[in-house]
Length: 171
Image (cartoon, rainbow, N blue to C red):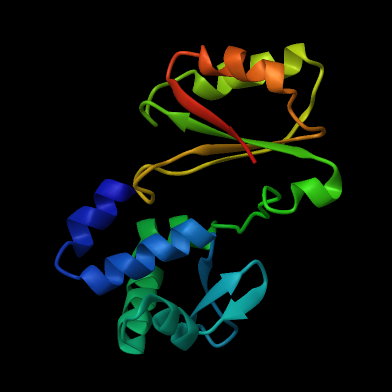
């Protein structure tokens, strides 16, 4: 999808900004009951003007890209399926959970999450959530892992030994 977006919208930086933000927030684009394109966070409508204001772009750029999404079958199919997900990392301590952040040497290296999962599972700790930044959206992507209980400090050295892991941060 990234190549498709970049190939088709390279001349429209404001529209690319909107397309990327919709993806990063999991905002979907669907037609409403009047057949007009609308942005939704789950089943809650998000106004085009709010998106424009948040991104510092003209509202007309948002409305124009929504029309393009709806009229392009590939974009429409992709954007209509997006869903927001909750991120428990910032509230995990209040829920008695643990959080670690994995800083990769390369975000495209396979096996990092598998290695981290194995180390955590050996300690008999369940993983509740894994959120991995997309390297297309974030300059310094990281993996945030929320666990049922805090990660013991002695696991840090094992986690750092995993190929592709540059650093581990306990949050």
